[in-house]
Length: 176
Image 1 (cartoon, rainbow, N blue to C red):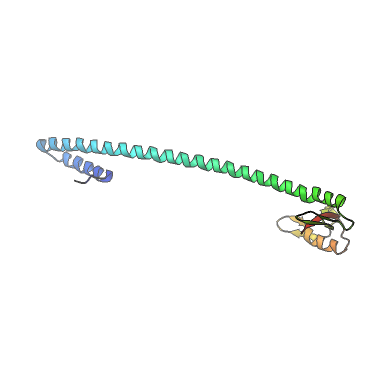
Image 2 (image 1 turned 120 degrees about the vertical axis):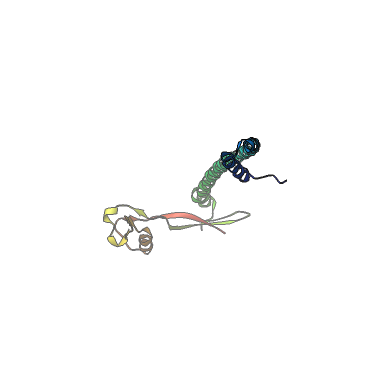
């Protein structure tokens, strides 16, 4: 005989209780013993279900711990990436231009065994000196009013004098 599922056992239990209500004394003893057997079978099934539920909870906690560990690792790697980018910016914006300027030839060129560095000047980021004197044409209204630095940069690099803005030449290095 195949083992019954918990649902089938509960159905049998309900059926036996209904039969017990309408049974005479003789049938009552048989039905009562059948009810006790069914209760024990349901108890064994519940023990198995409890074990299974505890195992599921254990697995869930392990998954949560793994997610937490991976989240911490992701944060650590993001911090390392920011630090590496900061170091790279320092090299590209400060150290290499200084070496090329000091050790390069009169044309701003410095060569190594692996690369050729050329010092050149280009426009840096646009700085807003006085927001109040910036013409409305350079203000972009989204949800709040902001300054259109891209438009100002375009005009400033073409020699147009725009009130409220300032742009200066910065030294950069091209590696080829």
